[in-house]
Length: 342
Figure (cartoon, rainbow, N blue to C red):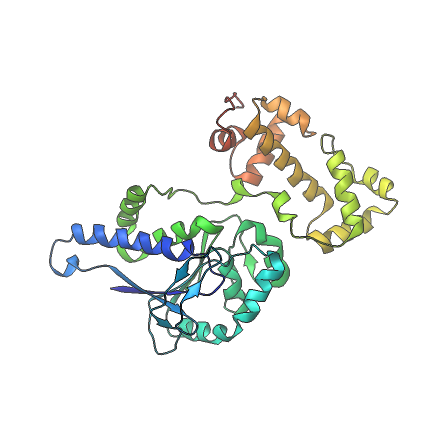
């Protein structure tokens, strides 16, 4: 039997605890039902909840989780499950939570050293990075915390596009509901891919999503504020000229600074270049047009400042992992009729 120790803490997302456990419960039911002998009719997974001191934990959604015990070195588990941290209070709130969790990091390292598989959902990848367990390795996290993660942990190769990554016995998953992908991956790991497929079908889980790229929004990432006034002025200018082809020299002239100065400020404030930033904004605009209008690809290109539909189609797919037509089909509003883009 595979034992999973789910860690719960005051700022954890309750669904990232209960959601995976529901998946494991269904896996157990299917496993037992198809068992051919008495040994196979016992549950595949067992689990327990552990808070720092063994006390109940009231989560940000107001739901209280009751622990089976505290987080201790003398408990053994095949898997340590780390639920995502609620980031409703922004990056500052997340950093404060990580600070309060410092006493847990040595224990987490000890569990890993003694063979426990670590599985972190969403922003819990920050917990692994704070504990030093990702140094020199790779991970993913929720896409909209990409900049904050890269700035704080430059020694970790962040693969934000990926829904799930594994590095030397450490699993990380992307934005919140990827706890489902994490649970299915663990099911496949211990019971095989066929079992994971049956569980996915039973629970109506899309087991084929492999990228966060279609869901990414530069605008939401920009909600992580910076205080660079030059970049703020540049962002305002870019928004007003988004429908035109971007020319860095024109923006530099408007801001009365050199192109080199703008590039340096963008790198420090946003960890990107002005050209890359504009390109992402144009993709965001194209996404909105595909979701809410019936514009043809030529019309979308015109409104985003591109003149070559073929080049734009390739660029769009590189950023979102979907063609414009595939994106529209997946994300369009119900009132929008589909038009032919290919």
